[in-house]
Length: 397
Image 1 (cartoon, rainbow, N blue to C red):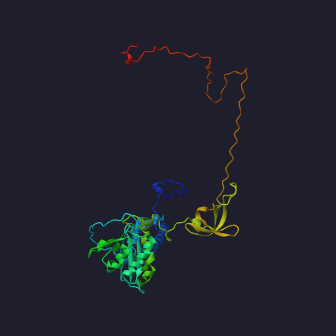
Image 2: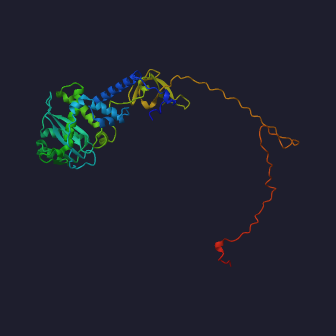
Protein backbone atom coordinates (compact mmCIF):
# COMPACT_ATOMS: atom_id res chain seq x y z
CA UNK A 1 0.00 0.00 0.00
CA UNK A 2 2.86 2.40 0.71
CA UNK A 3 4.34 1.88 -2.80
CA UNK A 4 0.98 2.22 -4.60
CA UNK A 5 1.41 5.96 -5.48
CA UNK A 6 4.77 5.30 -7.23
CA UNK A 7 5.64 3.91 -10.64
CA UNK A 8 8.40 1.31 -10.48
CA UNK A 9 9.70 -1.83 -12.17
CA UNK A 10 10.69 -4.97 -10.30
CA UNK A 11 14.03 -6.32 -11.56
CA UNK A 12 15.25 -9.73 -10.52
CA UNK A 13 18.81 -9.78 -9.19
CA UNK A 14 20.47 -13.18 -8.76
CA UNK A 15 22.04 -13.99 -5.43
CA UNK A 16 25.59 -13.99 -6.80
CA UNK A 17 25.16 -10.36 -7.90
CA UNK A 18 23.64 -9.20 -4.59
CA UNK A 19 26.77 -7.92 -2.87
CA UNK A 20 26.80 -6.93 0.80
CA UNK A 21 26.53 -3.15 1.24
CA UNK A 22 29.39 -1.33 2.91
CA UNK A 23 29.14 1.34 5.59
CA UNK A 24 29.56 4.25 3.16
CA UNK A 25 26.36 3.41 1.28
CA UNK A 26 24.35 3.73 4.49
CA UNK A 27 25.29 7.33 5.31
CA UNK A 28 22.17 8.86 3.73
CA UNK A 29 19.92 6.34 5.44
CA UNK A 30 21.42 7.10 8.84
CA UNK A 31 21.01 10.84 8.23
CA UNK A 32 17.35 10.36 7.32
CA UNK A 33 16.88 8.25 10.43
CA UNK A 34 18.44 10.94 12.60
CA UNK A 35 16.17 13.64 11.15
CA UNK A 36 13.11 11.42 11.69
CA UNK A 37 14.09 10.83 15.31
CA UNK A 38 14.61 14.56 15.89
CA UNK A 39 11.17 15.34 14.43
CA UNK A 40 9.59 12.62 16.57
CA UNK A 41 11.33 13.99 19.66
CA UNK A 42 10.06 17.49 18.82
CA UNK A 43 6.46 16.25 18.58
CA UNK A 44 6.98 14.37 21.85
CA UNK A 45 8.11 17.57 23.56
CA UNK A 46 5.22 19.67 22.18
CA UNK A 47 2.66 17.16 23.49
CA UNK A 48 4.05 17.31 27.05
CA UNK A 49 5.88 13.97 26.78
CA UNK A 50 3.05 11.40 26.46
CA UNK A 51 3.66 7.67 26.93
CA UNK A 52 4.13 5.05 24.24
CA UNK A 53 0.46 4.13 23.79
CA UNK A 54 -0.91 7.66 23.66
CA UNK A 55 1.93 8.89 21.44
CA UNK A 56 1.37 6.04 18.98
CA UNK A 57 -2.39 6.70 18.93
CA UNK A 58 -1.87 10.42 18.23
CA UNK A 59 0.64 9.75 15.42
CA UNK A 60 -1.67 7.15 13.88
CA UNK A 61 -4.57 9.63 13.84
CA UNK A 62 -2.35 12.21 12.13
CA UNK A 63 -1.17 9.59 9.59
CA UNK A 64 2.52 10.17 10.38
CA UNK A 65 5.00 7.42 9.35
CA UNK A 66 6.38 6.30 12.71
CA UNK A 67 6.40 2.76 14.04
CA UNK A 68 5.67 1.63 17.57
CA UNK A 69 9.28 0.52 17.95
CA UNK A 70 10.59 4.02 17.08
CA UNK A 71 8.22 5.54 19.62
CA UNK A 72 9.29 3.03 22.29
CA UNK A 73 12.99 3.71 21.75
CA UNK A 74 12.49 7.49 21.74
CA UNK A 75 10.34 7.41 24.91
CA UNK A 76 12.72 5.16 26.80
CA UNK A 77 15.65 7.44 25.89
CA UNK A 78 13.85 10.66 26.92
CA UNK A 79 15.68 12.12 29.91
CA UNK A 80 12.76 14.36 30.87
CA UNK A 81 10.35 11.42 31.02
CA UNK A 82 12.83 9.44 33.10
CA UNK A 83 13.11 12.26 35.66
CA UNK A 84 9.43 13.19 35.93
CA UNK A 85 7.93 9.72 35.36
CA UNK A 86 10.33 7.19 36.90
CA UNK A 87 9.27 3.59 36.43
CA UNK A 88 9.20 2.19 39.95
CA UNK A 89 8.20 -1.35 40.71
CA UNK A 90 4.78 -1.60 42.27
CA UNK A 91 2.52 -4.49 43.10
CA UNK A 92 -0.92 -3.95 41.61
CA UNK A 93 -3.87 -5.15 43.69
CA UNK A 94 -7.34 -5.36 42.12
CA UNK A 95 -9.60 -2.58 43.38
CA UNK A 96 -13.39 -2.76 43.61
CA UNK A 97 -15.23 -1.10 40.77
CA UNK A 98 -17.03 2.19 41.39
CA UNK A 99 -20.39 3.27 40.06
CA UNK A 100 -19.98 3.89 36.33
CA UNK A 101 -21.51 6.78 34.41
CA UNK A 102 -23.53 6.04 31.27
CA UNK A 103 -23.41 9.40 29.45
CA UNK A 104 -21.16 12.49 29.24
CA UNK A 105 -21.33 14.94 32.15
CA UNK A 106 -23.60 12.64 34.15
CA UNK A 107 -21.16 12.13 37.03
CA UNK A 108 -18.21 14.40 37.82
CA UNK A 109 -15.51 14.13 40.48
CA UNK A 110 -13.83 17.14 42.09
CA UNK A 111 -10.71 17.63 44.22
CA UNK A 112 -8.04 20.17 45.13
CA UNK A 113 -4.37 19.94 44.15
CA UNK A 114 -1.93 21.94 46.25
CA UNK A 115 -0.50 23.98 47.67
CA UNK A 116 1.92 24.29 44.77
CA UNK A 117 4.83 26.76 44.35
CA UNK A 118 3.79 29.93 42.53
CA UNK A 119 4.63 33.59 41.99
CA UNK A 120 1.00 34.64 42.16
CA UNK A 121 -1.74 34.24 44.75
CA UNK A 122 -3.07 31.07 43.13
CA UNK A 123 -1.58 28.28 45.26
CA UNK A 124 -4.21 25.61 44.56
CA UNK A 125 -5.80 23.92 41.55
CA UNK A 126 -9.45 22.83 41.54
CA UNK A 127 -9.52 19.71 39.34
CA UNK A 128 -12.73 18.35 37.83
CA UNK A 129 -13.10 15.24 35.66
CA UNK A 130 -16.07 13.75 33.85
CA UNK A 131 -16.25 10.09 34.89
CA UNK A 132 -17.73 8.88 31.56
CA UNK A 133 -15.33 10.58 29.12
CA UNK A 134 -12.35 11.31 31.44
CA UNK A 135 -12.50 14.90 30.14
CA UNK A 136 -10.47 17.08 32.58
CA UNK A 137 -10.94 20.63 33.84
CA UNK A 138 -8.62 22.68 36.05
CA UNK A 139 -9.08 26.07 37.72
CA UNK A 140 -6.29 28.00 39.53
CA UNK A 141 -7.49 29.07 42.97
CA UNK A 142 -6.15 31.30 45.72
CA UNK A 143 -7.82 29.30 48.52
CA UNK A 144 -9.93 26.20 49.13
CA UNK A 145 -13.01 27.92 50.52
CA UNK A 146 -16.59 26.98 49.70
CA UNK A 147 -17.11 30.30 47.90
CA UNK A 148 -14.24 29.50 45.51
CA UNK A 149 -15.69 26.06 44.78
CA UNK A 150 -19.14 27.51 44.04
CA UNK A 151 -17.67 30.20 41.75
CA UNK A 152 -15.75 27.77 39.54
CA UNK A 153 -18.49 25.12 39.51
CA UNK A 154 -21.01 27.75 38.46
CA UNK A 155 -18.84 28.84 35.50
CA UNK A 156 -18.45 25.17 34.50
CA UNK A 157 -22.18 24.43 34.76
CA UNK A 158 -23.10 27.51 32.73
CA UNK A 159 -20.89 26.19 29.91
CA UNK A 160 -21.66 22.45 29.95
CA UNK A 161 -24.96 22.23 31.82
CA UNK A 162 -25.87 20.63 35.11
CA UNK A 163 -24.55 17.15 35.97
CA UNK A 164 -26.61 14.57 37.78
CA UNK A 165 -24.02 13.63 40.40
CA UNK A 166 -20.98 15.24 42.03
CA UNK A 167 -18.49 13.06 43.90
CA UNK A 168 -15.73 14.39 46.16
CA UNK A 169 -13.52 13.53 49.11
CA UNK A 170 -14.12 14.64 52.68
CA UNK A 171 -12.56 18.10 52.28
CA UNK A 172 -13.96 20.86 54.48
CA UNK A 173 -15.09 22.99 51.53
CA UNK A 174 -16.87 20.06 49.85
CA UNK A 175 -18.57 19.03 53.12
CA UNK A 176 -19.77 22.59 53.84
CA UNK A 177 -23.48 23.37 53.91
CA UNK A 178 -23.02 26.17 51.34
CA UNK A 179 -21.75 23.81 48.62
CA UNK A 180 -24.36 21.18 49.45
CA UNK A 181 -27.16 23.73 49.34
CA UNK A 182 -25.87 25.13 46.03
CA UNK A 183 -25.80 21.67 44.42
CA UNK A 184 -29.04 20.35 45.91
CA UNK A 185 -30.97 23.48 44.89
CA UNK A 186 -30.06 22.70 41.27
CA UNK A 187 -31.10 19.06 41.47
CA UNK A 188 -27.55 17.67 41.71
CA UNK A 189 -26.95 14.69 44.00
CA UNK A 190 -23.75 14.55 46.03
CA UNK A 191 -21.60 11.85 47.63
CA UNK A 192 -18.22 11.62 49.34
CA UNK A 193 -15.56 9.04 50.06
CA UNK A 194 -15.08 7.24 53.33
CA UNK A 195 -12.42 8.40 55.78
CA UNK A 196 -8.79 7.63 54.87
CA UNK A 197 -9.81 6.07 51.57
CA UNK A 198 -8.49 8.15 48.63
CA UNK A 199 -9.18 5.21 46.28
CA UNK A 200 -12.85 6.11 46.52
CA UNK A 201 -12.08 9.24 44.49
CA UNK A 202 -9.36 7.57 42.46
CA UNK A 203 -10.26 9.00 39.05
CA UNK A 204 -9.67 12.62 40.02
CA UNK A 205 -6.69 11.63 42.19
CA UNK A 206 -5.12 10.06 39.09
CA UNK A 207 -5.91 13.27 37.19
CA UNK A 208 -4.01 15.29 39.79
CA UNK A 209 -0.93 13.16 39.21
CA UNK A 210 -1.24 13.14 35.41
CA UNK A 211 -1.93 16.88 35.18
CA UNK A 212 0.97 17.87 37.44
CA UNK A 213 3.38 15.62 35.55
CA UNK A 214 2.24 17.15 32.25
CA UNK A 215 2.80 20.63 33.73
CA UNK A 216 6.30 19.69 34.91
CA UNK A 217 7.18 18.20 31.53
CA UNK A 218 5.97 21.32 29.71
CA UNK A 219 7.90 23.59 32.09
CA UNK A 220 11.09 21.60 31.61
CA UNK A 221 10.65 21.63 27.82
CA UNK A 222 10.29 25.44 27.73
CA UNK A 223 12.98 25.99 30.41
CA UNK A 224 10.56 27.69 32.80
CA UNK A 225 10.68 27.60 36.61
CA UNK A 226 8.13 25.58 38.52
CA UNK A 227 6.50 28.78 39.86
CA UNK A 228 5.19 29.65 36.37
CA UNK A 229 2.95 26.58 36.06
CA UNK A 230 -0.08 28.73 35.18
CA UNK A 231 1.51 29.59 31.80
CA UNK A 232 1.49 25.96 30.67
CA UNK A 233 -1.71 24.79 32.39
CA UNK A 234 -3.78 25.21 29.22
CA UNK A 235 -1.19 23.29 27.16
CA UNK A 236 -1.22 20.43 29.66
CA UNK A 237 -5.03 20.24 29.58
CA UNK A 238 -5.01 20.31 25.77
CA UNK A 239 -2.51 17.45 25.74
CA UNK A 240 -4.57 15.27 28.10
CA UNK A 241 -7.77 15.94 26.17
CA UNK A 242 -6.17 15.16 22.80
CA UNK A 243 -4.25 11.97 23.66
CA UNK A 244 -5.53 8.45 24.07
CA UNK A 245 -6.99 7.41 27.41
CA UNK A 246 -6.42 3.68 27.86
CA UNK A 247 -9.40 3.39 30.22
CA UNK A 248 -11.95 4.27 27.51
CA UNK A 249 -9.75 3.35 24.48
CA UNK A 250 -10.22 6.75 22.81
CA UNK A 251 -9.41 10.38 23.52
CA UNK A 252 -11.46 12.24 26.16
CA UNK A 253 -12.47 14.79 23.54
CA UNK A 254 -13.87 12.11 21.20
CA UNK A 255 -15.79 10.53 24.05
CA UNK A 256 -17.17 13.88 25.20
CA UNK A 257 -18.01 15.58 21.90
CA UNK A 258 -18.03 12.66 19.40
CA UNK A 259 -15.58 14.31 16.99
CA UNK A 260 -11.80 14.54 16.67
CA UNK A 261 -9.95 17.36 18.39
CA UNK A 262 -8.01 19.73 16.17
CA UNK A 263 -4.36 20.31 17.00
CA UNK A 264 -1.75 22.72 15.57
CA UNK A 265 0.86 19.93 15.48
CA UNK A 266 1.17 16.88 13.26
CA UNK A 267 -0.82 18.19 10.28
CA UNK A 268 0.17 16.49 7.01
CA UNK A 269 -0.13 18.36 3.69
CA UNK A 270 0.78 17.50 0.10
CA UNK A 271 4.05 18.95 -1.16
CA UNK A 272 2.40 20.93 -3.96
CA UNK A 273 0.62 23.01 -1.29
CA UNK A 274 3.85 23.78 0.56
CA UNK A 275 6.40 24.15 -2.25
CA UNK A 276 4.48 25.17 -5.40
CA UNK A 277 4.08 28.80 -6.42
CA UNK A 278 1.16 28.33 -8.83
CA UNK A 279 -1.83 26.01 -8.50
CA UNK A 280 -5.07 25.43 -10.36
CA UNK A 281 -8.27 26.89 -8.89
CA UNK A 282 -11.70 25.53 -9.75
CA UNK A 283 -13.90 28.07 -11.51
CA UNK A 284 -17.27 28.23 -9.78
CA UNK A 285 -18.58 31.11 -11.94
CA UNK A 286 -18.75 29.32 -15.28
CA UNK A 287 -21.74 30.33 -17.39
CA UNK A 288 -21.22 27.55 -19.91
CA UNK A 289 -19.92 24.01 -19.65
CA UNK A 290 -17.53 24.70 -22.53
CA UNK A 291 -15.55 27.27 -20.51
CA UNK A 292 -12.31 26.09 -18.78
CA UNK A 293 -12.78 24.16 -15.56
CA UNK A 294 -9.83 25.76 -13.74
CA UNK A 295 -7.64 28.85 -13.80
CA UNK A 296 -4.04 29.33 -12.73
CA UNK A 297 -3.52 31.36 -9.54
CA UNK A 298 -0.56 32.27 -7.30
CA UNK A 299 -0.37 30.40 -3.97
CA UNK A 300 0.59 32.79 -1.14
CA UNK A 301 -0.13 30.86 2.09
CA UNK A 302 -1.66 27.51 2.90
CA UNK A 303 -2.68 25.32 5.82
CA UNK A 304 -4.40 21.95 6.12
CA UNK A 305 -7.87 23.27 5.17
CA UNK A 306 -7.60 26.67 3.46
CA UNK A 307 -5.22 28.62 1.21
CA UNK A 308 -4.63 32.29 0.48
CA UNK A 309 -4.26 32.88 -3.28
CA UNK A 310 -3.86 35.79 -5.72
CA UNK A 311 -6.12 35.77 -8.78
CA UNK A 312 -5.17 36.94 -12.27
CA UNK A 313 -6.79 40.35 -11.77
CA UNK A 314 -4.66 40.96 -8.65
CA UNK A 315 -7.35 40.24 -6.07
CA UNK A 316 -6.31 38.15 -3.03
CA UNK A 317 -8.81 35.80 -1.41
CA UNK A 318 -9.10 32.73 0.80
CA UNK A 319 -10.31 29.49 -0.80
CA UNK A 320 -10.85 25.95 0.39
CA UNK A 321 -8.21 23.38 -0.48
CA UNK A 322 -10.97 21.24 -1.98
CA UNK A 323 -11.05 23.68 -4.92
CA UNK A 324 -7.28 23.52 -5.60
CA UNK A 325 -5.34 21.09 -7.78
CA UNK A 326 -1.65 20.79 -8.67
CA UNK A 327 -0.27 21.92 -12.01
CA UNK A 328 1.07 18.98 -14.00
CA UNK A 329 4.79 18.83 -14.80
CA UNK A 330 6.14 19.57 -18.27
CA UNK A 331 6.93 16.01 -19.15
CA UNK A 332 7.96 14.75 -22.55
CA UNK A 333 5.10 14.29 -24.91
CA UNK A 334 5.47 11.06 -26.81
CA UNK A 335 3.98 11.35 -30.23
CA UNK A 336 1.90 8.36 -31.06
CA UNK A 337 2.64 6.64 -34.32
CA UNK A 338 -0.09 6.84 -36.93
CA UNK A 339 -1.83 3.57 -37.35
CA UNK A 340 -1.46 2.00 -40.78
CA UNK A 341 -4.46 2.46 -42.96
CA UNK A 342 -6.21 -0.80 -43.63
CA UNK A 343 -7.86 -1.11 -47.04
CA UNK A 344 -10.57 -3.72 -47.26
CA UNK A 345 -11.29 -4.97 -50.76
CA UNK A 346 -14.87 -5.96 -51.40
CA UNK A 347 -15.22 -9.20 -53.38
CA UNK A 348 -17.05 -9.01 -56.69
CA UNK A 349 -20.34 -10.90 -56.78
CA UNK A 350 -20.10 -14.07 -58.83
CA UNK A 351 -21.78 -14.16 -62.22
CA UNK A 352 -24.25 -16.78 -63.36
CA UNK A 353 -21.71 -18.52 -65.59
CA UNK A 354 -19.05 -18.60 -62.86
CA UNK A 355 -18.33 -21.94 -61.27
CA UNK A 356 -19.66 -22.26 -57.71
CA UNK A 357 -16.55 -24.18 -56.55
CA UNK A 358 -14.16 -21.29 -55.93
CA UNK A 359 -10.45 -21.81 -55.45
CA UNK A 360 -9.48 -20.57 -51.91
CA UNK A 361 -5.80 -19.74 -51.77
CA UNK A 362 -3.76 -20.52 -48.60
CA UNK A 363 -6.75 -22.19 -46.86
CA UNK A 364 -8.40 -25.55 -46.61
CA UNK A 365 -11.95 -24.23 -46.28
CA UNK A 366 -14.57 -26.26 -48.09
CA UNK A 367 -17.90 -24.83 -49.07
CA UNK A 368 -20.93 -26.59 -47.62
CA UNK A 369 -24.02 -26.93 -49.77
CA UNK A 370 -26.92 -24.71 -48.81
CA UNK A 371 -29.91 -26.64 -47.48
CA UNK A 372 -33.34 -25.37 -48.36
CA UNK A 373 -35.36 -25.80 -45.17
CA UNK A 374 -38.67 -24.89 -46.75
CA UNK A 375 -38.52 -27.66 -49.39
CA UNK A 376 -37.42 -30.40 -46.96
CA UNK A 377 -40.23 -32.47 -45.38
CA UNK A 378 -40.15 -33.12 -41.67
CA UNK A 379 -39.50 -36.74 -40.67
CA UNK A 380 -41.69 -38.18 -37.91
CA UNK A 381 -40.40 -40.68 -35.35
CA UNK A 382 -41.41 -44.31 -35.83
CA UNK A 383 -41.12 -45.13 -32.11
CA UNK A 384 -44.28 -46.60 -30.60
CA UNK A 385 -45.62 -44.51 -27.74
CA UNK A 386 -46.37 -46.56 -24.63
CA UNK A 387 -47.84 -45.53 -21.28
CA UNK A 388 -45.42 -45.35 -18.33
CA UNK A 389 -44.95 -48.40 -16.15
CA UNK A 390 -46.45 -46.86 -13.05
CA UNK A 391 -49.81 -46.69 -14.89
CA UNK A 392 -49.91 -50.34 -15.85
CA UNK A 393 -52.21 -51.27 -12.93
CA UNK A 394 -54.76 -48.65 -13.94
CA UNK A 395 -57.47 -49.26 -16.51
CA UNK A 396 -58.82 -46.47 -18.62
CA UNK A 397 -62.62 -46.27 -18.82
